Image (cartoon, rainbow, N blue to C red):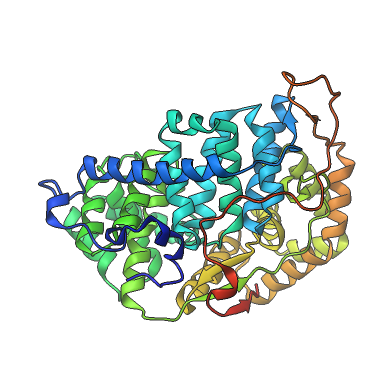
Length: 450
């Protein structure tokens, strides 16, 4: 069974079957959950979410987007806000992006749900995936309002990046890439046994699961693109392992609705849960307050934006940074600094769920990323992270020096004729009713250390 703290958000649905494995009458001849069952769960989560959206009053002072190019920085701010638990900033970004690129906003909400939230708010992840698959349901209460509500729900609950961390163990390890070139020729049964083997290293178990899912359809860095397996065998293994129906649903819908290979680690996460009976804790992220204004986070200008790359490259020229990255091979020096900025700032999670093993996994993923860049020494890695943390104020100045500015409207073009401007929100914006655990009644909180 999953921890009682992880399933609190599902309790109002009054569906205990969600926490049990799928019985034989829900399976097809290959041991995979029947489509009709999954469609029923789609309806369950959609209808409950739509009911909440209809009852929710969306803040009236959220901005409207006007310049399509702003969508990249706004969705980046959205993801940073969700990670940090900043409901106001998440709604700000989602509301503005809706005017610029609805499909892009929807895809990013799906990725945020699976990459950054996952076990922290199972209801929020399931509701996001259910609504992502049905435009008619999103439009019942208004599609913009629905997506803004989802942004708030994902931001307001606990977080979990364990699925992403398991992917990192494979994608950023060149030795694992070489192993994948051999293993993808193995029989499905052999790969399934490797996933289930608790004596194998986590990166090898994750590699086996990814290969079993098919790395042609669900590609990953360094994985064989010619591996054309169907994911059905991996889904059948999820059933065989006794995975709760809610986790199976999330895995299946994540695979179908834009999360890429991030559904794969759920099988391994469930097995780790069975193999390790450890108490759950909440880990408080170690990151500085963001000095952005108007609901937009400056951390959004990261390695995935033009302005962010420019600012980070200028950061590399500072003596206090350069002395730490000179030890990194020239070919991966930029990537090493970008990873350091991500870990110090952009990747910070407000409160993430964890056991001793998941906390260890989080640190292992950081080590693997830096090792990929040629920075394997722990002391050098810590020195670089400390230097980046110390120089964050200067990085913010570099970001502002790029001349970046959002062009937004205070009202919809249909409602009024306000001039574009960079907006500010009141200190307190109404937050949505959150189907997420209530933090004061959760497990113990510990502080994060990189």
